[in-house]
Length: 350
Figure 1 (cartoon, rainbow, N blue to C red):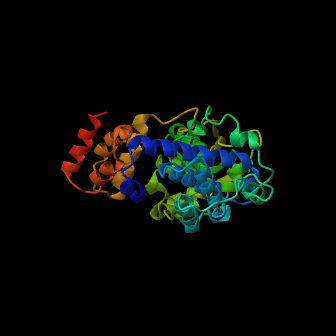
Figure 2 (figure 1 turned 180 degrees about the vertical axis):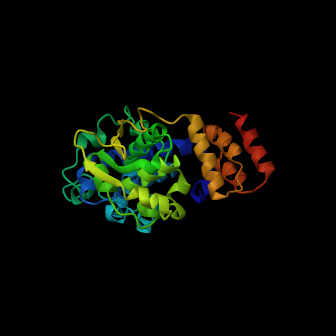
Figure 3 (figure 1 turned 90 degrees about the vertical axis):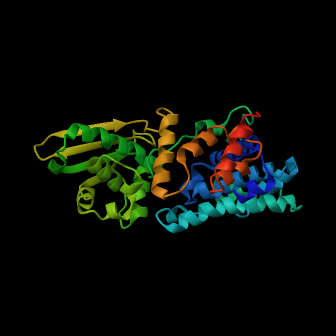
């Protein structure tokens, strides 16, 4: 935020840089997938640094060579491991991706150079951290097809591969008609990725966010899967713990990543089952604008911010019309209604 405030950047410039940054990091990630992640590299962190570097270099007005140098410098600062996902160390590596990307762009702006093949070279980032890079996925259709169009918004604060589990459990809860106490066991089936990410014991709230067992228990028992349902009080709530212990995860290689089947076995011998192939929030079932606005309001309430969520939403939808995004930042940092009015007045000039 300080970066954009200090330079008087327009909303259109910020959006353009953001889109380009997302495109760069997604394409680099695609070029080394799935081997990169399978080796233990946390791709959000390791590739996020390239997106941050490209976006910041664009906002700094660097030349093509300058942006290349920024990406190359970022390659030497890429890190983050999957093993740390259930811990605070994950947050450190994700934060470092943003910080190091900005640092790389600032160094490039000062004339620091990097190899023009820092990504795909014989001893470059891609080969050091994965297999032979897929150059077609890296540059094929560049400027014509956009990876950002394939990105979606998450409705639940859990790992994306658990969303189908949650949706299936919501459907089953409606069919159970409050017979949760009659559940003898629960079977969750999914791909190898689902099991690798979420078949784990739950010791804290970080574990809960990446747990098949906790996602299942909360969705069935509470009918909710928001931020409070993954907070510490819920993690150790006796009814949740008890229901988690009835969940068993099984591999079903016929189910693709992102899909899940949940089967509930009742004391009377009845079995209820639901399969979700495309979770809510996916490309096949995307969140509406109303859903996204509601999520912002919920997060605003949970965070206890003094910001007016409705005003934030209104301003965000018109971000492209702002001549200077710093006015938006000041308006929502308690600078007063006069600043907010100036933001709205600026819109009328575009």
